[in-house]
Image 1: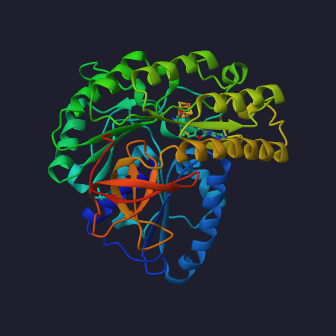
Image 2 (image 1 turned 45 degrees about the vertical axis):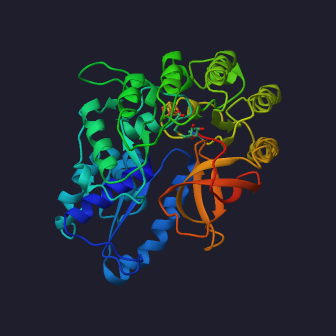
Image 3 (image 1 turned 120 degrees about the vertical axis):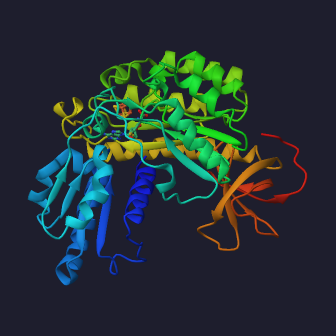
Length: 428
Ligand code: SAH
Ligand code: SF4
């Protein structure tokens, strides 16, 4: 979501006549787009701002904070960092280009909410990739999971009308984009504000756009992941058989305290349905360890669930209390060392599962969307398969931004390695 927001902001700045500069030192304006979801990401912001302060002293660089930390602390951010020039929350990105000319004169704060969806001209978005694009379909969250700050930073849910989403997708298709990733804090609760059509209907519509080959979406809340969406995924042939379905904990009692709205059993029933409908589906999840009061027994239930579901990938975090949330009012009573230890156990188990699963893919030929060069080796290409796994590979010719076939030759727990192949034997 933040990557996509940054692409929107960059587009606005370019449209207002600014140009991108290669380093912070050479910039006249620096905007830090922020995430407030965990304590650690917020701490990183303050250390970055500390480093940027010297630039401000030396050459008067204009520095602003936008995004969720801006919204969470509003004008209080000035108590911590008085030299900031502007503070703009996620609901007010549209105002960034308005304030740039007035920057040198006064400090600016924009954190009020708007109940309406506001479209930015599609042509303005400065996308990083030429083949894969994010499309925001909704913003905000109504769920109030007890640990989560997002409803306080992104406000209540608002939905973009289907025609506007389709217009953006068609524009992307006409420019040669091949993959679309629909974005929202909880895409499963999407509803067209004008017609009442739901997320399954949206998938069906996007699936009709010629030349888009892969469709993905993130994030799905299990509570709103109704069977109709699983059937729509199966029916829409361009929707990748890949789903991020965050469970957070394998223990029903912890899930209740998290206010997630489903039990372990209900979650597992959804996994069964998905695997029955799409046996090749790749599943991923989010896990929080050390939620207040999480007992050893409850933690073992999370390990048991991971061993049972065998996800393709997981994102796992130590619980950190966040301002304004219900959980922050409870004692954060799992010691840091214990949280760390639980996280190590989760990650070690998952690493083993991923290695086993990845090994079973060796010898397959897979369809890959090439998105760049491997970070480790400039002679190696990188891309993703339909399951959204990272695949690094050799190719004798330039395959940037193209779909190609790759034969998987080896793997680690977190990526696959292969070489460009001519004859596909596996067709998703
Ligand atoms: N809307 C998404 C999640 C967005 S936040 C969803 O409901 O799945 C991304 C992830 O950050 C969450 O899934 C959760 O695992 C993690 N997270 C959120 N708040 C946290 C906190 N206070 N401490 C640790 N992890 C947290
Ligand atoms: Fe946070 Fe829960 Fe909303 Fe996800 S669904 S953004 S975890 S409150």
